[in-house]
Picture 1 (cartoon, rainbow, N blue to C red):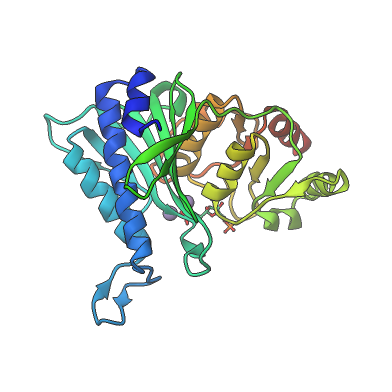
Picture 2 (tube, rainbow, N blue to C red):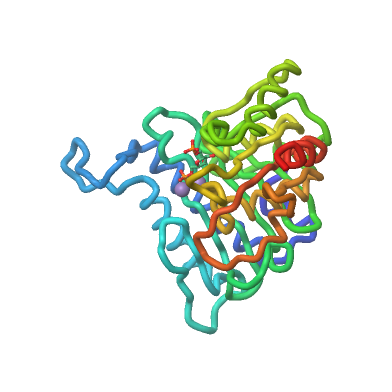
Length: 305
Ligand code: AHG
Ligand code: MN
Ligand code: MN
């Protein structure tokens, strides 16, 4: 059995980064406890015991923010649930952490798999840079029948850990890689087909080729499926109302792009630019995304030109 911290040390991950990842893993465990404890109110409300309950994504945001502050390794944090990033006063850590505390929050009541996404950046700013220049690691947790944490440290591959009943994450898969071609497709934002004939044709083409649909409506499980099977494509194009789609660059797309590029997959926006090369000009900016098996991603973006 390979424990999380021990494995990362063997991979040559720095003490500081390992310690930060340890705090992220702790936050993931607390969020999982909250989910299992039934704190799943969709809105701020009272539970059956008359206690105030927080909306789950707000609770997850609190848990992660507090844990990162405690770590003393964060210089700045930015959350999908917060309007502005929070800077910690000097002397503080050397990392910026961007996160989506709960991805797939609309799936909570349906009891589908959900997740948390984290991007780890060097320094104390997110604006005016790109994922390629400044991100050093990223990871995501899946809260499903099993709890997994998948981590990419730049240059050190992608590895999956699972939470065991003794409360420790242990290695379940190392050096995850994605094949260039695939039979799986996960077509997001199908509403875009109403105004975009090419997107409709792309999807019809996948159907005619007898490919296999795997789509849950949650970015985390949908992308985890691709990494688990080692192949697939997830698409989220623009539509008439959303020129850059709806998925967020800093909290969702940049962290996943680092994971997928580390696994030899690709992540492009609808204009064919690598998502990791997109400059961050606004904390809450959105980006279109085509992510997964390299050849499939390239072919899909070309087909929409
Ligand atoms: P969040 O719950 O953090 O707001 O994100 C939900 C996202 C993502 O998980 C998923 O891929 C996408 O929303 C699906 O969006 P639509 O079905 O609304 O197009
Ligand atoms: Mn999300
Ligand atoms: Mn969210």
